[in-house]
Image (cartoon, rainbow, N blue to C red; front, side, top):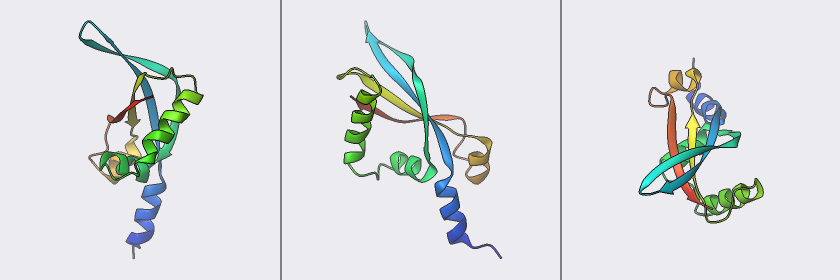
Length: 105
């Protein structure tokens, strides 16, 4: 018999690759420059960001962390989640790469 509570908890702790892009706007066009660092966060946090249910201080903390990693203050950064085949098997909506948010640093 499957314990759905334990299964949901395990799925929420599954790690997702996060990729950061610097947004450059010139002459009305937007270009994305990949930043040289990637990280992993839990699937539960990714779902909270997508559902817009994270605490408001999350974005402030993310901005501070990006500054610590060398991103210039005043820049815009796009955060994307790169899902694996395991995530797609758990939930078909979690496929490929998806934009999570854009943060003003």
